[in-house]
Length: 477
Image 1: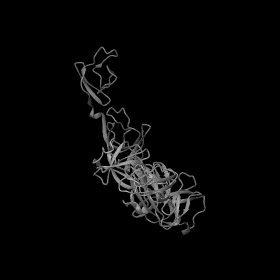
Image 2: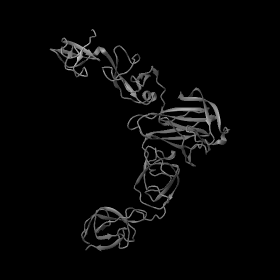
Image 3: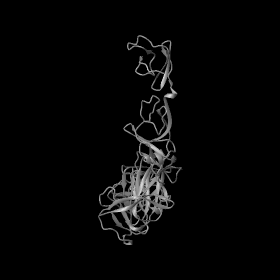
Image 4: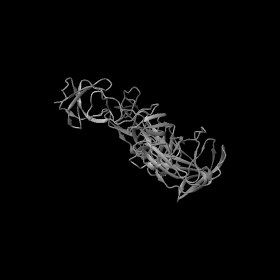
């Protein structure tokens, strides 16, 4: 095969109708086979036929790809896609990776590897980097067995998954056991160190340092360094055969405001939002400041936080209607208890199910005539709402009639409540949407039928004013 200068009547070889010898496109080239960019076409009687891929011009390969990190690539499940190299090259030897047989479109920046391989390559600015060994993969989220340790800095990678179902909130339960330990979580480049203790509630380092540890536990159990203090600690970054594996040392600063004296052997809660499929891993970092250390750890895999019904935020605890949906993270003892459907003291509460936005401070009225008070996104008080009283339920017709007896005998299937003393509403009673007087009032035009139970035939009709107060009733014959 030889290279020749020819001309085509299109901007692309694939859409051209003929090959010419001259730039003016007056003389068609000799019939035969012409190849460009990995595909060839045959010219017959001066007309180009359909293009065919030239199999010996390139090699192709199925590769895994992510845009986020080598850890996501090597440690999470990926779906392979076909890519192309220059002929004779492999993933390990190619000078670049392409998305087309013409080798004209360089693959997107990111991380690539052959499926199940332990090596990857990264494209940055359309330049393919060197072959690199995959990082060690972390432990799976869930209940994690932590071996005892000594004074040191601990960094445990946690695999969270990267599918459409692996989104929501990561709820971390951390127990320092008998010795104080520092803790923080790192996800998607952000450090998290806000905790809620079951005994005292909201805890967070007050140092203002973004990557500071929040150190919790019984500080009388060992000699805690005075703060601020910067020391070199042995660095442990994996667990093997039931023991921590050291990988050098690390300088760590304990800042003023990092240390909190708490009861030992209690699980505090941390919530880390994971609204997207990737990144698929996080790092749980712990700091053992005593000569011996050990902690218990459970990291719930990402999922939507449980919801509860509430009013919006208000400055009082008066009973009121709900109509808003918020979310909470359960304490450790309640974490698997499906009967816990509302937040309790010291729970984190959020406006979204991934734990991204804490509820603003104030009081919220729940759907069981109780309230919670929220400070810093954590429940700081709870109790019965003010003015709660039980209304009487009844059923009403769905529609109304301009005639006082127009709904007599009609089906009653709409649940309502009134504050009177009788079974059905009477003149002067107020109609409510809920079982307490804090519920919203209900109004309608004209006359509506009332019955004792769902599916009852209306035996009484009534009309209300703009405040939901019964103006008059009519006893059906």
